[in-house]
Amino acid sequence: MSFTELDTAYMARAIELAKQGRFTTTPNPNVGCVLVKDGEIVGEGFHQIAGQGHAEVNALAVAGDNAKGATAYVTLEPCSHYGRTPPCAEGLKAAGVSKVIAAMVDPNPAVSGRGLQILADAGISVASGLLEQQARDLNKGFLKRMESGLPYVTCKMACSLDGKTALNNGQSKWITGPKARQDVQAFRAQSCAILTGADTVITDNAKLNVRVDELPFTMPTSLPLRQPTRIIIDSQNRLTPELALFSIESPVIIFTTSLDNHTKWPHFVKHEVVPANNNKVDLSAVLKRLAELQFNHIWLEAGATLAGVFAEQDLIDEYIVYIAPKLIGDMGKSLLNFAEVTMMSDITELTFTDTVMIGDDIRLTAIKAKQ
Ligand code: AOF
Ligand code: ZN
Image (cartoon, rainbow, N blue to C red):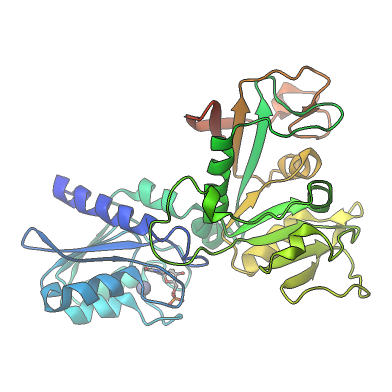
C-alpha cells in the first residue's frame, strides 16, 4: 500500500508522542497513536507506564465518539492479547475506526501480526511499514529482547583525542566536559539498567544513579523519574554494604558466581548466581538472565577490563564515545583491554551512525557493521 504525505506527517506526530514515554515505559515499548477524522486530529496519546493504558487506549479516550470512522496511526501494531491490559485491536474495532496504519509489526510473540489480523477480519483497512525505521529506533531495546532474547547493550566510553581514558597513574577526573557528563545522565535516564564492575564501584565509590538536576533538559512529562536498576558484576564477592552505591535506596542486582551468605544486604539488593567462565561471571549468561528479567536496554559504563570482555565476546550493540580535545600520550590508559589480534581480517568492524558536538567534546556513535 502507498502512503500519502499527510499519512507520513501523522505518523511522525505519533512517533514524537511515543518519545515522551522514553523515561518510563520499560519493560514495555514506547508507542504513540494519533486518530484522524475528516483531516483533523480527534485524539492522540502515548504509552506512559507498564500496566496502564496503551497508546491506542489513551488516544481513544480523548477522541470519544469521534473515533468512529477515524484513521488510527500507531507506531507499533495494536496488541491482540490480554497482558497487563486488554487487547487494543479489540478496542479500536469496538470504537469503529475505519482504517489502521501501523509503523511496524509487533515482534512480541504474543502479538506478531495477530493484532492487524483481528482488525482486517473486522473489515477495517490495515497497512504497516510507514516510517518503520524511525519506529524501530524508538525501541531498540524492546525489539532486541523480543527478536533475540537478549537486551540491547550500549557501551559508553570517554577519552582524549589520542584515545586515552586516564593517566598512567590512574588519574582521570575529568577528561570530558560538563556538557558531556550531562548528556550521559540523559542516556542513563532512558536506559533500563546501568551495568558496571565491582572494580569501578569500589575505586570510584560510584553511585550510578540519575541526578535530575544534572539532566540537560526538563523531563517531558510530569511522570516521576524512574531510576535505572544498577547491575554490578562481582565475580569474587568484593562488594560491601558500606559502599556509596548502597546509600541510595534503589534496586541493585549483583551478579556473582557463588553466593556469600554471611553479608547482610539492604532490601533493595538482589543477587543472581550465574555460571563461571575462567573464574569470572559468564557475561552471555548475565545478558540472557537480564532479558528474562525484562530488561530491554543496558547502559554499560564500565572500566577497560570489563568493557573489553564485552567487546571481545561481541556482546555490545552500540558504542557511544565522547572524545575530548586533549592529548594524554601513549603512557595513558586505553579504552578497551582485550587480547591481541594478529590478523586484520579478525579486527572488529563498526559503522558510525552519528557524530555531534556536545559542549567542547565530540560524541560518536557506532554500531556493529552489517555482516
Ligand atoms: C505497550 N504500549 O501502547 C502498545 C503495546 O502487558 P501489557 O498489556 O501492557 O502489554 C504489553 C505488550 O503490548 C507489549 O509488549 C507490546 O507487545 C504490546 N503493545 N505495549 O506497552 C502500547 N501498543
Ligand atoms: Zn495494546
